[in-house]
Amino acid sequence: MASICDYLQSRLKDYIAQKHESVRWFVTHSGVSYSTIYRLYNGEQKKLSFANAKAILNFISPAEAASILADFYPDEASGLGTAKGADELAAILADDLPLYKVFAFAEMADIGRNEVKEEFGRQGLLLLDKLVDLGILIETGSGFKSTLEGRAHPPEEVVKKTAIHHFHMVALSEPGSIIEDMREGLSDEGIRDLYEAVEELRTKALKIAAEKKGNRLAVLSVIAGPGSVK
Image 1 (cartoon, helix red, strand yellow):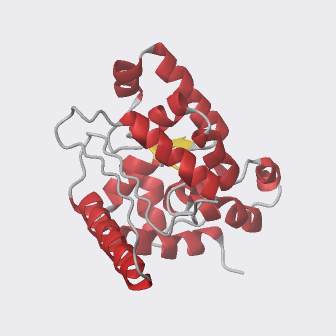
Image 2: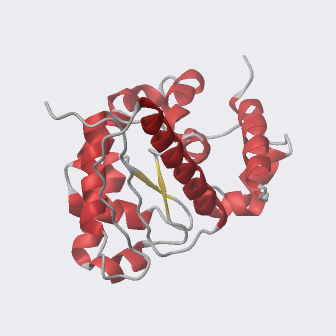
């Protein structure tokens, strides 16, 4: 079995290459020291503490972190199995609008505790600590990272409740906001075309999210399909 350093060297190089970023960028966002990441990246690191391995894995692959740590650090990772699953964490957010608002704000780039306090006050900091304690957010060197990023689709009920959160978070008087309602009898072909139109919107939205990042929170929830009247 390869060592944790050999394993993470490969994962680290792939992650940085995929992001088109640098070692220094990774250090800034992961919270692990420059010397450790530099040596790991170049194959010079022979030992790695559990804390550093956990910080690196929580940054590059939060969904896999617990299982990987259990392979390389069975004793230290024994308590990780009691952590709440991703669906359970998503359900907590779906049932708590104030908590979800802080979560959505804090996971944006370059948002730290000062920005959260400025936006939400002391209560926002308390909710932020709750998000960290639950394992929904991880505090990095420059802000916070969601552990739910890149996960599989949550249960339908969670998706619907999250969409309701988004509805309440958008003020239609704000420039750039829009809401549309539509009910229409369609043929099977019409339903397929409607699905493709929404899928095209989704693709464009993901492209915008990847290419035009900023610190103004935007939300989007779309639902379309055959409507049941039963």
